[in-house]
Length: 144
Image 1 (cartoon, rainbow, N blue to C red):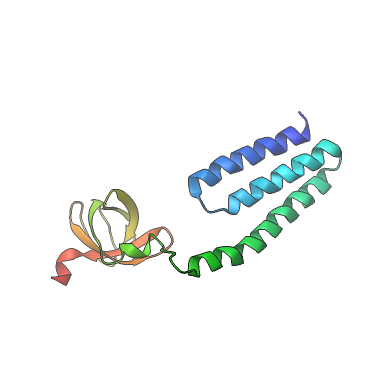
Image 2: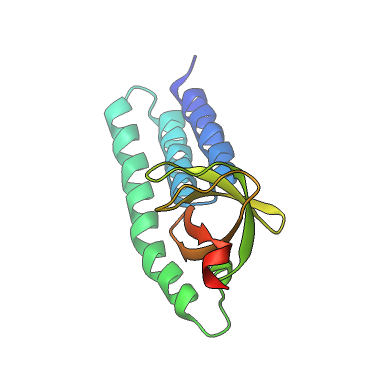
């Protein structure tokens, strides 16, 4: 199999993974793999050069889009959907033990959650803090 085909398959797999995670980092690596495929098309025997071109493209895209993403997040009118979770009520779907993760449903979404206390399934909780993908909750009754 030709090297450019392998690079395109890798780019496709990375693109599908990006669609599932929505982090944009895999997108840049996918574009780097496409660039490596282009190099492989013209220079099929230069594997090291293909890898270097792919890495440079991915690194440049990552470096230049980080400040752009930061600027977009701080721009007027931008709202992070996760910050609105703090203070909301949810229900425990999977028991949360101290130091362990459980599952909490808030509205129509489910979140991995942690707590400093044991919270059993079907108990109501309140979101105290949100990390990147994990929320911290406490039992709802403590607040009222």
